[in-house]
Every structure is written in C-alpha cells, then in structure tokens.
Image (cartoon, rainbow, N blue to C red):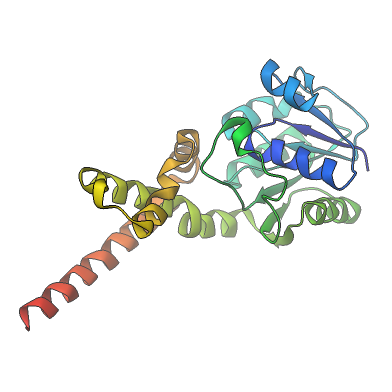
Length: 241
C-alpha cells in the first residue's frame, strides 16, 4: 500500500512512528522545518498523485481550506474530531474520501506528543462519503495497522457522540481547573485526573466550539443539570443529619 501522511502533529507524527515500527513505508509531509527534520519528511505542501491512501492529519480550518486543491486520483482519509463539515466539503470537492477520527490522544503538543502506541486498542471512527468497497477495505486495513478498531458510523452520530465523550468533558475539566486553581497545594491524583483534559492544545477547544458547538453546549447543559441535582442531594443529606 502506497501511503502518504500530511500533517505531522500529534496524530500524524504518531501514525508515522507506528508505521515505521511495523515496517510500512509512508511518505511524510509537513511545512515545519523542525518537524520535517525529525521525521525525515518532505517539507512542503502535499500535491502528490497515485497514492493508495493519503491521510490528512490536519486541523479542520486548514483541511477545509485545501480540499478543493487536492489531486483527485488519491483516496483521502482525514483525522478530524468533528465530521459533519469535513464530509460535506469532501463531497463538494469531488474527492474519493472517507471521514476518519482515531479516538486517541494525550495532553502534550509537538514532538513530545508522538507515541507509536497511541492508537492501540482505541476506536477509529469511519464515515463513508463516496468511497467504494475497496476504499473501505483500505482504510480498515490502515486502522488495523495502527492497532485501532475501525467502527463505521455517520457524521451526525459521530459528532453527537463525541460531544458527550470528548468535547463537553474537555470543558468540564477546564471548569474543575478554574474552581480548584487556588487550592492546588492540596491536589491529589483525583484532581489530576479530573483536570488532565484541560491541558490539551487550546486549538482543539476552538474546533469543539466552532464546528461542534451546538452539540457540545447541549451536553454541557445536561451535565450542569446533573451537577445541580447532585448538589441538591448532597445538601439534603447534610440537612438531614
């Protein structure tokens, strides 16, 4: 399989390391000279043709901006954490495209975030756009090379589910951090676990707000209501003593 990975942040860089570990060659592309030197990548914008699979591991604003300019003869797979807008743009651009999201990550940024084992045992969400049966087999094979478990879904189901399991929890973590920041000299492992997500790259928060804000806000209100109910229950228990 002839593979290219475009964008070598946490996801793309970790994919590159994993493919090297399992003996699969991939052409790597990024525009950051430091990143390129570390991974021996092509330091330029991608314009290649004839690939069996091109992984677009890019932030959504960049991804949406370049999709109309991509060569049409490759099969493309993105890695963005929101799918609806990406899938719609892929259709408009007329690309052979499958929406993807490896549901894995850590709170680090840059080369420190690269981890060849980042995807092992994790779900890899896949959204059919206009690929054929062979294209679906190709992306499933790629996900399994990473150690992931491919799961087919729709863009809508993906975005609603991720609002519950990733995007809203990030903001809950931020809230816990804000409330606890003046008391951190007494912080233990529980607080550290609750605030880990708040340390993520702030660019991800921008993505959650801009591209999945309605779903995320709805979940945050559901969580807030549950917390208020818990607060009432805790207060009642205190008053009953």
